[in-house]
Image (cartoon, rainbow, N blue to C red; front, side):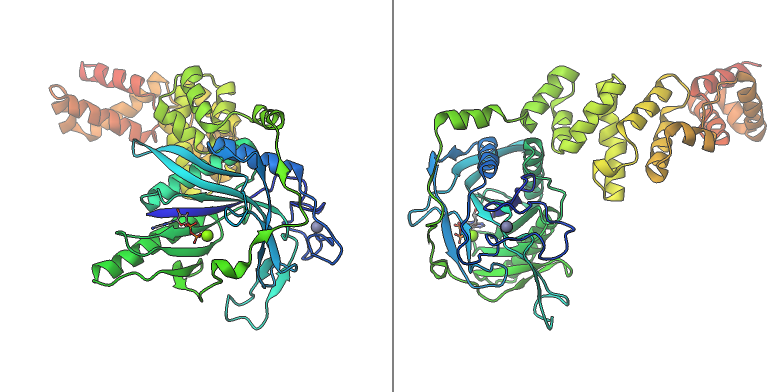
Length: 473
Ligand code: ADP
Ligand code: MG
Ligand code: ZN
């Protein structure tokens, strides 16, 4: 059983959650994106970012949650240098706390089964500052603190323990990222934009909470490790102890961490500086109406508008960038099925090999469309097209230039192919004998022509020429 507590940075907002400092802090010199409010200086007061509430409500709606008509904020008190106030403004579902939303679900297809992962609740809270341990946690002589991030809006999305495997967690995260990207509330590729704690238990045993997973790429790795660790303990006849562990990215393992505060240590109480937020129907409706197309609706449209298979449509919309790339390419080369096939095979292979996102791929929609045109007009073969795509991905050169540089245009010149064929016939007398009876030997001879021309001979012409020669010229 796996349950996730996913932290999503509201990094498409202009400002932080309770002050006018910028929400985008990356690349700024340390401690320059701060003000009396996010530093918690005496006399300062927080003011809730209205757009942050809209973003939270859009996410809640997209995750099929019940949205609270009225909700409040709480103080979560703790002493730690990542927050100068010594408390974090957050939400809570107990002790008079009402979070922005609860009881939803996120659906996806995995291994051809329909899955619905229940969402327990969604909370709005502020991000703490960033601590930098120059030589790693526990071994540094000093720690640096940067409050540029302190006060940036976060959503905490808590699932029920419905995820049944690391693979399912992978697809869940993918789908969640896609929803967030479609809503335009989070640039999920930014460092630290998605972080998580993962709760894992095996065979009804104790649950272990893995903290400190600092990017979406690490979530599945952390879960895989933890499942393996617990399974081994159980197989050896032991039992897993209930504990909090840390994911150590550099080592690729979880380690037991000192017991952190218990729930009651946080002394949660309603935040006195922020009034209860009440939303009327009109406001809610206006927010719903402003929501863009979501992945499921988009997949449905891909099936209806472009005639894609549902499976293919779902693969595309699982990554907003990929779905955008598809639609861009189809605008330039109007055969959606061919485009979808190429994206799912050749383009995805490049992304996997290079470990990059689609927007980093040198093969732009325009370049892909150009390659597909060259194939359609017969200028190059499909096989050469694939080679060109790889070359464009590696060099960033336009497909045209690659074709000329590598001399890859298709050879349809009958006389030329005939000369190559005659050479092949001289070198393979036995195959020529067999070819009079055996189709496989014919294919072999054609294959030799393709080899000598490095795949550039037009296979139909080669086929014709071979048959002519076999029939005596
Ligand atoms: P806490 O308040 O201590 O953080 P919660 O009951 O709120 O605990 O659950 C936190 C997370 O742990 C949720 O995502 C939930 O799905 C998950 N969880 C609960 N029970 C289990 C379990 N037996 N195995 C794995 N995950 C679990
Ligand atoms: Mg928790
Ligand atoms: Zn500030």
